[in-house]
Length: 196
Image (tube, helix red, strand yellow):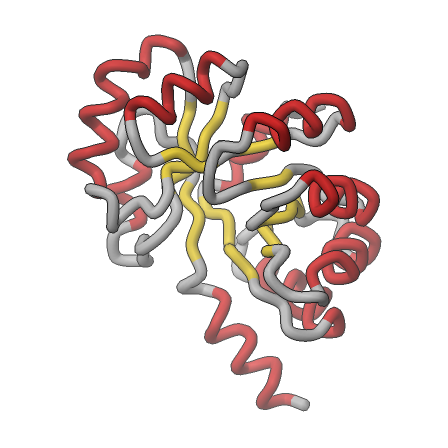
């Protein structure tokens, strides 16, 4: 059985999805799979997220599906009940991190500074989301921080401002195992909408 980190490493790209309707979830997941993308982070920014995760988990089990923008313990619990295999947040909230451990849902907190990296590592995180990756200093900042903390074994998923053009450059950074992004989602959703 693969670990969560191994699944992220295998996926390489984690699409960040904002669902407006639960009905979009399964066609979108299937379209991602057809393009060789095996993961999806459905953000908890809309009411459709929970049901969207449930449908993907049930109907497209090949997709490694999780919940994004998890800002509360309640959202974390709802994501777990919906079938999320991981949860991601834009920042580091130790209460949510603790609750994730209690309910058994792998949790990837967001960090942007050396201090936040240190706090996440101290709290037991093996993986963090570097966010908003481009805007806080991009690859140069991440390399500088990882030069100091990389020996701990922490691995990183940069997200925010990453594009298809910069994807390989980010993936080449030692310690980066995958990237989050939305560049591939919008065209698929537009194509699906046009078919309706």
